[in-house]
Amino acid sequence: MKQTAVSPAVEKESRTIRSATEVLTGTSKKGGLALIFSPTQGMLARMIQLQRQRLYFATETLVIHLNTHENTNAGENEGRIDHLTKELRWKPDFAQRIVQNALQKDMY
Image 1 (cartoon, rainbow, N blue to C red):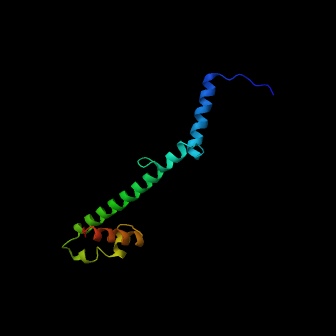
Image 2 (cartoon, rainbow, N blue to C red):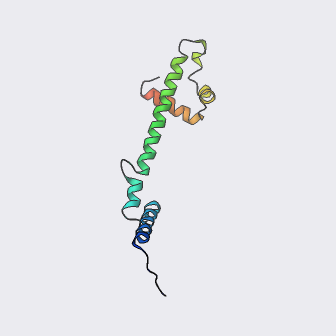
Image 3 (cartoon, rainbow, N blue to C red):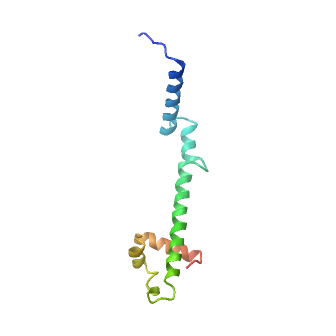
């Protein structure tokens, strides 16, 4: 089979695309694991960070919501799970988790 000459620029671009593909698919020994497990910028670290932010912001939202209705006639019902699911559009399990988090941190 006859090989054709490839310009250095095309060869470099081909190596770059191949390297990027290896990193994204995890077949590169160096890049694939770093992309997933890097302690500050890896996918796993990012998922944990987003989960913590979601919990933090939801807890803050709950506290603000309760403070808004404090000392009002509706204040008694504002902390109930069924009310939170309707008003804040949270799933019951998530609302329960946020209430528990606020209670643990003495925010509520």
